[in-house]
Structures are given as structure tokens and as C-alpha cells.
Figure 1 (cartoon, rainbow, N blue to C red):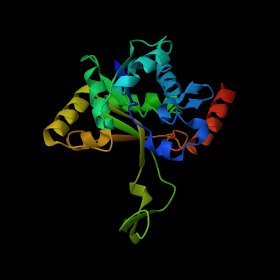
Figure 2: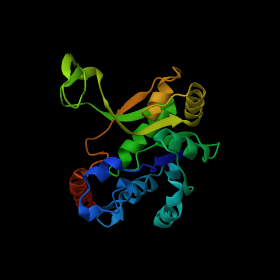
Figure 3: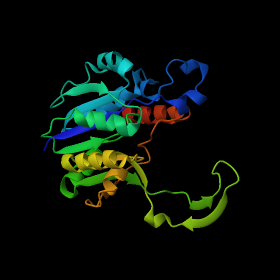
Length: 246
């Protein structure tokens, strides 16, 4: 089975910039912020390089960042079954993933899309979600919410009114990787282009096909998406714990 991984990393990191301290000025793009001496993107790439299932990795970044990222990742692909490549992304996540998808070999069996700023995905979860998708056509990683979820009306930032309490038994918080057979994701992108549809994640594109019942593989609360400056404190703690276990 030939498994490819797409890492969209073309974002501007606006949420990180808004709360960034003077220390991180110039490095507020979250995928390039340093975690114990290495960019977050590099830590994420290393997780997939270490997986024996992964053949190819394609990283999508902004055009002007390609030389820098290629240099950054030059030594990271050693031991990978196939290739580690950097391509130009788009203005949105969906565009970046689709451009990276176009760069994959057509004989790819399964495609995993993972947030470039989730560096704490573990090898066992990668294995489980990839193997599930290979069988069912699609699988995502998710966790069950621990907080009570309310449906509201009005502005969420202030002035919202509670309308209902939603049972957590029917909810999951979607993480990544989100993994699909190559042909399934190809059809999903074709349908989105035809309908001028923009989804919030790859699963939302595949759901529209109504052809694949997407499975959920339980993930971990450690599989955080580093989005805001405060997330870096938790990331440093998790990195220290990982290093200690190794």
C-alpha cells in the first residue's frame, strides 16, 4: 500500500501574530516557530518520516517560502520510502491541499492530510487511521468533547442566547490526519470545483459525495493544533515528556 501525506503549511498565522510577544516577532507564522530548536513544521514532518507506512510527503507553502522550506527539510527525508517534496500552496487550506494532491503519483493508494502544526500525532494513531481508511475509503481522527456543548443564536463573541444543549454522545471534535483513498479524494475535489464549494476540512468535501461512510478513529488530547501563542507552553511540556519517554 502506497501512502502519501499532505501537510498544508501556507497559512499566514494571523491568530498567532495577534498575540505574539516581541520575542517571537518575525517568527509568528506558527509552522515556523521554534520548538526546542526546530520549527514546528520539522517536528511534524519527522513524525511521518518515522512511520513505516508513509511513502511520500508533500508540503504546501507560499511560493516565496519554497526555497527556505526546501533547505529546512533537506535532511529530514532520509529513511523515507519515497520522496519529501515542497510545492506552492494556495490562498486557502483547500486550495493548498488540492495543489499538493495534484503533485502526488497517480498510483498512490491512500492520502493522509495533516495539519502542519500538529506535531504530537503518534505513530500508532497514524497506523490505525491509515489502515481504517484503506478498508472503508475514509477515516478521520477525532476526540469526544469533555465540555457541555450548547447551541446558541446571536453573536458567539457576546450577546449569544442558549437555544439547546447538544448531547456529546453524537459529537466528536475532528483532528487530523484525515485519510482517504486516492480516488475518493480525487472525486471530492472534482465535485467541490464543479459546485464552487469550500469546506472546512477534507472530510466535509468527501461527505458531500454521499458515497463513503467516513470512520472515526479516536485520537488524543495531546494531538493539539498550535494556533495561539499560549499553545507553545503546552507544546514545550509535551515535547519534554516525549523526549523523556524516548
